[in-house]
Length: 265
Image (tube, rainbow, N blue to C red; front, side):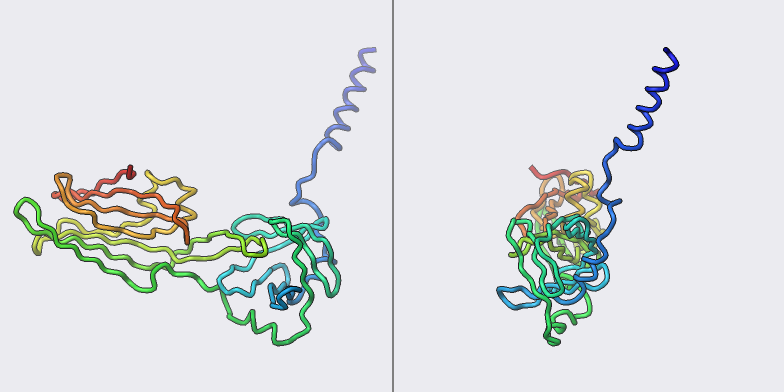
């Protein structure tokens, strides 16, 4: 009897191991027929303007500021893998028609381009990166304190460090825009004597700004606020691109040239 029960439990466990798990979507088989049907340039039915070009496993957008994205088609769903993973249900797909549901639950209706000139919308050659500053910015402040004259400088230097922001266009599609970040340089002089001079990078603010926010934001600005008993007061602004969502960090340079920071209240 005990042997029969043990055998039954073994069979039950074996069945559970083989059939009890759920399949990961990443392991699902890709629809290669749908992928081949999507190749080409697709034009919006309403505006008759080119919206996207699909070549291989990549979607290119007509707006040069939108980054191309890798995609897959599985079970009537278009999966895009940009800064975020996004899923669009495909309503209709054929040789000349492509309809899908946007994230705003609207049906985007496209048709295949038959106009050779539509390819010109995708001939820019690369993604247009959006700079926050196109050239170096210099600010010079002259202050007097305790009978002495000081100069406080701020230099905002555009860099080639890229920040990706995911937003949504008017069709409710997930779009990645790429921005160039900045590096700040601050320095303080008493007459010709340098009290402090250093680059300030966004990563130096990590004790006061979360890593997740830093990864999505730009080092947008640095302002000299004034001088007082604690030294020379600067404020750094780290902001989400094209928004008013910011974190502010106070920086203080002492009269002995020591830099300290704290989150602004």
